[in-house]
Length: 307
Image 1 (cartoon, helix red, strand yellow):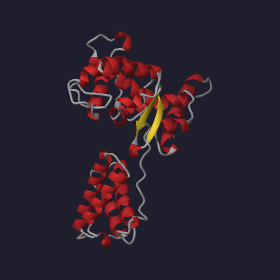
Image 2: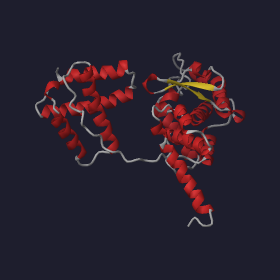
Image 3: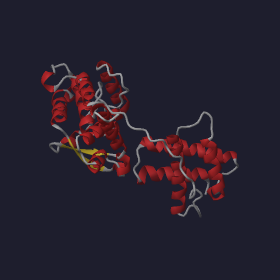
Image 4: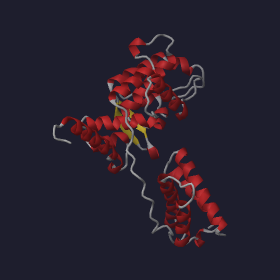
C-alpha cells in the first residue's frame, strides 16, 4: 500500500472512528507528514518496505536534531508513527508492525503550576462583577466571570467549556462535559459558579445572541458567534493582568489549581481523576506531588526540629 494512502486512511480512522479532536488530528497529520517526507528521502513510498531499522533511524535522527526537540514533542511524534503502523497491521494493510521495539523518549516530569486560593479569588474578582454587583450594561463582564468561575469550579479544559451548550447546564448542580474522544462525564458545579452562569445566561447571553446567528453554545463572543478557545485565553490573560498576578496564568492553570486545591482539601485521587476526565490515575497522581511539596514546605517552616 502506498504510504500517502496509508496515512490518509489512518487519519480518517482517528478522526471518524475514534473521534479525536480536530486539534489532535492536525498534530498527527503534521507528524506523519514529516515521517513520510523523511521516508521519501530514503526512496521509500510503500508501507511494505518500512523496516524496524528505518523506523529506529528516523527516531534517532529526530532525537539528535539541533536545536533539540522537546521530549514531549518526540514522544508525540513516536506515538503518531506507532499508531499508524499498529493500525495498518491490525487492518491487514501491512504484514507486520515495524515499531514493535521502538522505545519512546522519557519525558521529564513537570509539576503543574497552580495558583493559591487567594490568587484564584483575585483572578475571579478581576474577571467581571459578581452577579449581585453587576450593572445592566455589564454584558461582557458577566460572561467573563461565568467563564472563569466555571473553569475553576469544574476543572474542565477550556476546549470543553467553550463547546458547552445551554442544555448541558439543565441538570441542576451538575454539568455534562464532553471530553477527549467524545467521552462524557458529569461534574458537580458549586454555588458560586452556578450563580455566575445563571446571571450570564439570563442577563447577558440574550443581548449577545441577537447579534449573530442562532446557536446552542453557552458562551458567545461580542458579535454573537460561539466563543473560541483563543478568545477564552485572552479573557483569562486580561483578568490576570487586572489582578496583577505575576505568575503565568493560562486556562490550564485553573485546571491545575482545581485539582491541587481538591487534593489539599482531602479529596481522593481517584475522585479527582474522574472529575478531570483522565483515562489513567497515573496522569492525576502528578498533582499529589504538588501537595506533598506543600506539606514539606509547611513542615520545614513549622516544626522546631525540621532543619
